[in-house]
Image (cartoon, rainbow over the protein chains, first blue to last red):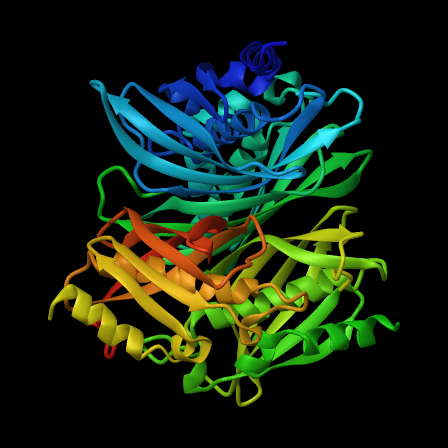
Length: 143
Length: 143
Length: 143
Length: 143
């Protein structure tokens, strides 16, 4: 299967992405974007986007960026991530731009920058770094 | 307002917690639990609970644990967190147990352990550490 | 070799621990302590202990806590850690108490709390969480 | 004082940098490099550079990158950092390239990439992200 098709098929199986209303953007080798339209359904108590929603799309973008460089029979699992939240999100939508920093046989280091988009302007709101693990030969885990 | 009432009122304003179906558990000074019933609506591609959903309740539990020790006119914002995911979640529900490690005037270090609960047994699935910031005198941020 | 003897032998090979003047403390299954006497040789610009020196003993304590639960032919490597520094170090010495949170076949999650010791009183100054990797069958890596 | 002079003067007060044998490289607004010559004095048990030594120069490079954008009466303290170690260090020396991701009034997010240099070739070995805090009006902390 084409890597982009593989990621689209996998993304559509993610219940959480549907629940949040996230959508896939650009897919390229080692790079995947995910977008999220702002709404009260993903807010924290002050009306900003919840750190959990920001993390969810950033982790997913980083994970698929890693998967895009892995063999077809391999699955990806997040083993850890750290996210720094540098500004509250405001605007129409946020976009997480995932990219691979270093691909390894077992572990891949990936990063995602998250931007708030307002009137066509992008402003950095968060930075995530994640360790992604390649999973082989485990039933049901090949994406 | 009673600290527990304050956290309950704040929690009910979090759109994301409602969207995910999370509920508040025990509230004590420096300690807050949040639960999440497992369902396909919060899954990743392999059917496990999405790291973003685990992070969302762990971050919220850690944040309210921090808020529970802050003055009444103060709000809390997450500035960063790291989460290690040590096992896939299986069972009926997951529970994040937030607690304050060190409360400071500006920054508070909080932690959340997340457990999968199955047949009354708890199994550790994730560990989060977070830096929470006290916000004073900013409009609309007092929880 | 006895696990404690193995860790002592490995520790003595760590050039950095000798350079910093760090010493091994208690060794138990899943738990290792490392101490460091305070001196201007390990300071940052304000005279406090440098975050790099705190990290060095915390990472080492966490790594040996992980190694203490691994088979004899296995080596340990740090793949990532995060450290929160909650207070400047003052007193006679600091002590890092490493312990395993979750031991896995490939990855082990370990933690280290670092305390400043002054007049027999311990005060928390830092908290580290680390992912340790088991290395097998690679020349020269069996500790 | 000229910002570069200020950083040089501050660096020379860091006992740990002298103990490790680290040296300052390029200084520019929002960017600072620090180098470390490889030697057995900074090794871990397998002969690689110790993660603590890598962290020490990466944290320092990130901290001074942050300080380079702060007012003259302000000091900088690391509140937390995370480092991913993606390859063991080999070669003649390592270089940490610190840069500011987002400067704020109280908190600054900085990053450092660490490279091993061998025969003029640079290879990424580690990535650090750090939260740096501005300190004002505290005795003895103005760098």
